Length: 214
Ligand SMILES: [Ca+2]
Image (cartoon, rainbow, N blue to C red; front, side):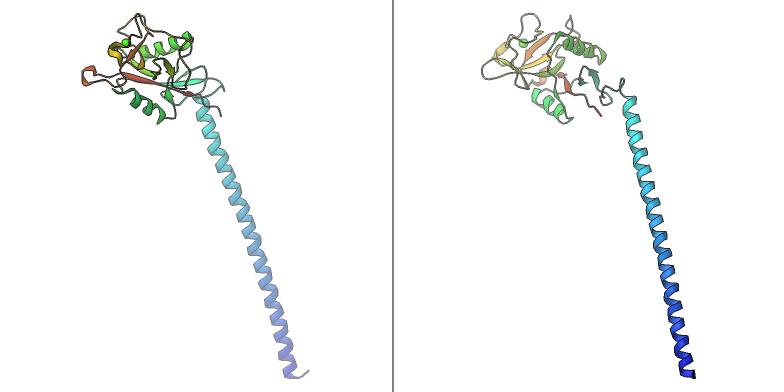
């Protein structure tokens, strides 16, 4: 073999050596990348599981058993959560909007048990004023009362105070539960849906929404 042949052979061996080295290194990098990727995915999964466990743990703390939760500051009764606000607004419609903004609506009272529960909330939240709290009852064009879900009040549970509903002045189209000044607690009355300044401090409100299960 002459000098040219030797140089050619040496170059071929060198190229093969370089190619093998490069391929081995690339394989190493790829293997390393895969292992990093696996580690990252594992960490993400563990992080997500921890997050969900924290949420479940927080929720279980607010629950009685595993039967469902009410948000903080809401009171649970049956399958509903209730929110009471004192001296809320002069307008029944504004009270309704306020409840809807919280994913609820004004309360619908369907039984003496529920009425008693809400009357107890007026004690808990010290709703003393006779104007009490707006709830989800209104008189419609046929002069009859309906709950906000469209159920007619007629032939369903009612808890009107003595002589009510009297539709005083022919403009009392909205329902409220009286406050503690009027005994016994839990009495209903019809009021104008928009009260003038002379009525201040204005009625509070009671919102109701379904309990959340998880
Ligand atoms: Ca009245």
